[in-house]
Length: 291
Image 1: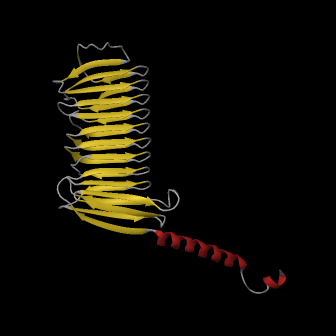
Image 2 (image 1 turned 180 degrees about the horizontal axis):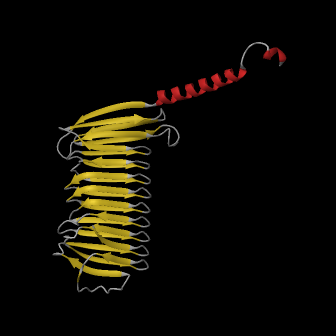
């Protein structure tokens, strides 16, 4: 040991340098494994586009013309992208080569598509993001965070297990949302049918319930809250078996075959009652508030 100490070498610095080199090598390998790929397709009106990845984010935005552009980021060499076009139908899928490790098998997708395209997205982890699309939408993911913005005149189906769901500025849509424990937030969402169902998650609505639509918000143990303007035109029916029900909003009494129980339910109308709104929970709270 004495002879080593007199060689003039600082072994603390040597060890630090060695660790730094190892980390740099690992980082370099990780960066080298990440691969970016681009795919381009020409489609006709109302193309059908599906993207399926076990792990990873998928974002879709409206582009121009009749071109579909897909940018895929592969996080490792343990996964590859399968892609094909059959006429007006495009299918993109992540193909696991080895193992199922989440970080190594992740593929992120960014798509630019015609605004009238029909979109089907699936990712277990997400997030899933769709913006400015007029075609029909189907979004699925166990833990995926789901966001849909600025859509109109389309059918919107969303399913998650735990992932929260937010829809913003979805107009004149046929909307059906199902989740087990994810929260559902609807901002300015209107249409002939808007249905949101969550077993344990909360449901929040901020809007005017449109005109002439059917709205159904149902939970088992989650709370429901609706924030509406003073000039709303809708009929309301709310009931919670065990939770508290209240409305901070003037409603006209409406004769109904459903019996009312103070603190547990209410039935009433506002304006011309153009839309029908049903709020139902087994043990959660329900509240209707004026904006």
